[in-house]
Length: 260
Image (spheres, rainbow, N blue to C red):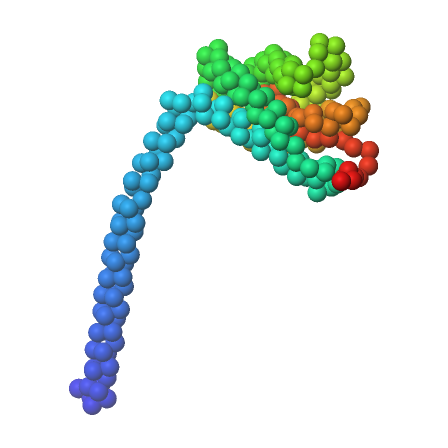
């Protein structure tokens, strides 16, 4: 064998040895990573079980209480956000806790009604075919939506201590405008709900959508009211008749604080 070839043998041996070392190192690191992942998964398993049990309890055994709590909480949140926005624009001078109380009361009623309404719809029409979803959306808009708007308006007048005459005036001035306006938002939102979501999550979905549906109702409710009616709240989140859940006031000018 030529001397030059003999001299190359140690280099080739060293290259093979380095390759084996690299393979062994990579294999060891891979096994270590697998062990870390297994330990992390085992440590998270109790957390996952707790979350599963919590979900079954809140959106299963105690679904009615959950729906009421969600409606009350997001109704109050929506009104609080609306008041903060009005204060930042100079439309309000102070935070009105009474409005939040109105919203909590309206949200409680809406949560109960929506809870039983969705259960009834799923008993009447089973499945998620296009035909079933279309029937649910149509009945929801034609039957239940007016009921929820009327419930809100009646509850509002009761909370504010108004009489029958004021209630009739409110219905004449506001009901139809609000009912027609909500057709632009809630049919597609409800189609998604009926097609994609289990029944137990629909009140939560309604409340979430309602958080973003404030502007037009604020205009409708306050476009012809004087400053004495500035505490008029929106409808609660969770209404499938779906007025928004925040309250607002429409003032003719900037906020002017009373002199002390």
